[in-house]
Length: 269
Image (cartoon, rainbow, N blue to C red; front, side):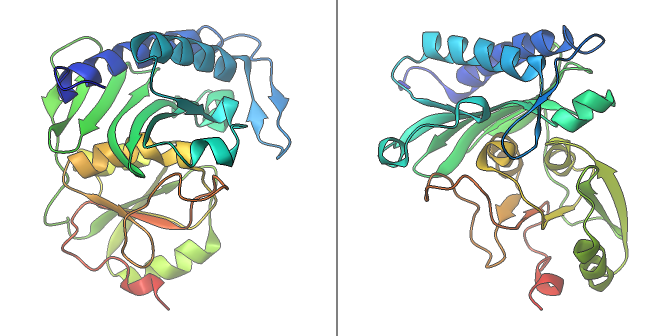
């Protein structure tokens, strides 16, 4: 990554890569998806692998000195990656269950991690050809296809009642109980990183996640939310960070559109 390449230029290249990956995914959308299962019983399709291969090839060609960690190549030893100061973190198909169910709520996620924080990211929605992109200290945007991008920002102050987004595939009874303490709100369910994107563009205010996720599920969308003025935090209020431990599993986290509001109070017990 060199100084003469601005964040917006790099984001444009990442959008191009993610759109190509989206087309590779859609090649498998209406036919035989080749569904298998990983060791943790999560589904894997030919589309996941096609997207992974394309993204890794393109990132390697564009930035040969930056290592890549993808969900589909997550066997890199901790002894190797703990020394990384920056790297690409990729989920080639976030929302595989949504893809299999053909509901359109799946994304391609590409993030640049620097010093344990996501500083740049693109979340692309293949079915609609919409991309959400952002970089810290540069801004956040929504882009339809190859059109001119439009700036986005989180909603501050939050709506009343607050609009809360939750997972479609991972309903959580504990979450429902905690949300009762939040006060007036409306809950909407959807899949993949789209929940972050709704917060980033000011269409939702809060996304609490009390279920399991991995670092590649969140990094790109976190970069977009934070570039749009929001925050993604752990229960103690500190930022969700990356590559700080051997395991890839995230702790519980919360996506805040309006950081001035105390969203975490109902969750602190």
